Image 1 (cartoon, rainbow, N blue to C red):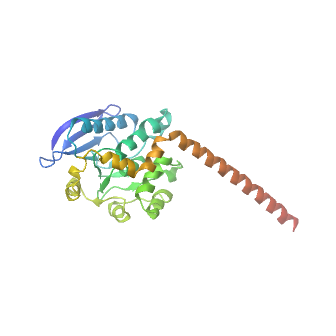
Image 2 (spheres, rainbow, N blue to C red):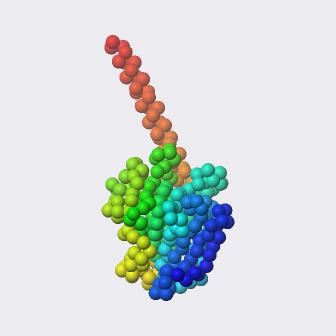
Length: 270
């Protein structure tokens, strides 16, 4: 592989290395991120990854971007919840910005899932255009249900947009763990394999020249306008959640009132 540039991830001593996979793939840019111990989506990680995307867009010919992990066990283990909760504006200033950048990137993007992608890591994979997963190790899973953290609109919308209703339900309401072959069958990934299989996908789908006309990102903006609305209207999302919570509270109060009335009438008949 030919090394092109490296962006440090200062908080962990890690880095994002950009390479060309081979001489035959000059306009294929492989971003390998290594941020011990499991590639958490922290502000410094996100800043580094967005910078790497910016460098490719503005300093290199148009082509295809692949992302993968230099850590064998994990593609990404999602957010550092403690850090995310203690960093003011984290989701709007970092996480939504990262998701938006991939969703509208002006070149094809392919995620090579070498290991586990949990929660935010799975979401990041879904914000790519294509996905190839290791067939033998690693799971994709949204496991917030298991530890009681509700998903916000942009976290949900990308699954709703790209998956069938049944798979969407299994991802969100069952916290199902998808191995490579299960992911392929469910339509979450486009194939299983390694870097060679990613390069085959790029060749077979003729992705290398798709960005040449300069409208690739624009086409994606139109395709995913509903997802972009959620990414760009954080205040509106929060207001909608407040409205839903108020409605839920009203329903619960009405339900408790009706239960008490029923209990009172039942006792009176005894």
